[in-house]
Length: 203
Image (cartoon, rainbow, N blue to C red):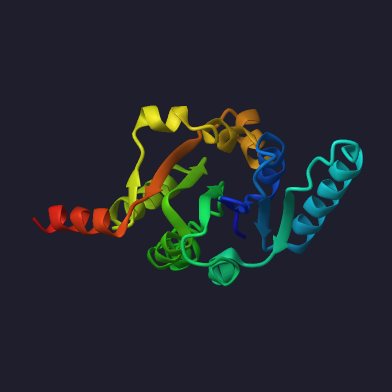
C-alpha cells in the first residue's frame, strides 16, 4: 500500500490519517489523502464526514478529502506540472524482499514523476521506522538531480516536521513500541540548479 501526502498551494495530498491533522492545522490548504486500500479509504472518508458534522458551525474540515487510488501509478494523472507544494511519504511499506524493491514508493522512476508535479522549492518529506528503507530512500533522493536535502536546522524549523513523526496511527504504534523514527525533507530545486548539481558531480 502507499502512504502518500501532498500539499498544493490550494490542494494537498497526504497519508490518509496525517491528512486529518494537517487539515486542522492548515485550514487555508486543501488536504487530500491517497490510499490504495478500500477499507482504509472508506474509514478515513467516514472520519472526515464526522468531523465536518461536528464542526459545521465553523465550517471546519471542508478542506480535506480522501481518494482511493494507487499513487505510484496514477499520481501524475491527478496533478499538472509544478502544482504541488508538499509531498509526504509516511511509514510506507518497506517491501523487504529485493524482488519487491521496485514497489517501494521512493524509487528511481517515481522520483522523476514527483519532481515533475512538485513546484520549484516544493518539499518532499519521508519518515519511516525502518532504517534500511530510510537509507534506500535517502540514497535515491541524494542521487536524483531534482532534489537536495534540507539541513538539520531547516528541517527542525519546518512546521510539518513534528507532524510527520506524530500524526498517524503508524507513528503511534512505533512510539508505543519504543521504536526509532527516521525522517528527512528534500527540496525540489530548479532546472538550472539541477544542471549545476550534475556538473559538480561530473566534475
